Length: 306
Image (tube, rainbow, N blue to C red; front, side):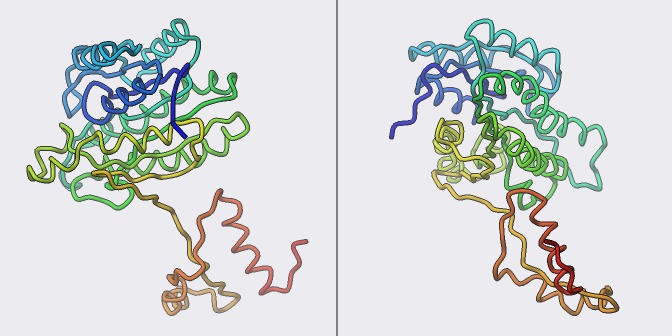
């Protein structure tokens, strides 16, 4: 099966360089019309220029594709609304949204300022929300949508000096989980890409040999699958240097403590059993997880939930 995006319209945020540019090029090469969004600022989010987005558009057009640039700040609802309105006016819809835009303001938490915290969360999390809100009604009306959030190993597993970035990157996973449930009836599928690539945000931190291996182009195939018609939904796909793996949030079976045994001392004493991964599950929503514990409590009390 060949994955194509003919007659599909995609918005890629942060597409002026790095991963976003590769994503935009990949979508266009397979037939999509692409809105190349980039504020054009520095890695820290300051300043702004239309040049990076225009360069990506030129690359797409030179290869025979269709694209236009838009410099919306992804956290600005008015600017994002204008971007989506232009896509609708020019091409009649928005089928795919790639929430890729991001900035870095790394520092140890003890030295973090609230301004640096808010700036990073505003772009990564609020930006993803703002863009998704803008396309959501159009996707619902069309009964079709593919949205990809961008997370990171810094959010899923942690990385020193990136509390702001890591918090925002894990937050988009929670956003995905809820939107997966809310969008299912309208064939809107939501996934998360957790990429590792040598971009302007990371290449100065990596040895040259590692930079050579971590080409953004080796990540984009995973993105294209997550944005395709046959995509899964609610998946976290990790992609780095041509390697692809799926991350699951698993919960152990756990234990039940009843009556006088329900004490912190018993939690401590049973910590090994609580942590036993035998039979761990990946829940599709919060309700089954709650009912697991309610079921254990009911069984211990001899109460029927039927």
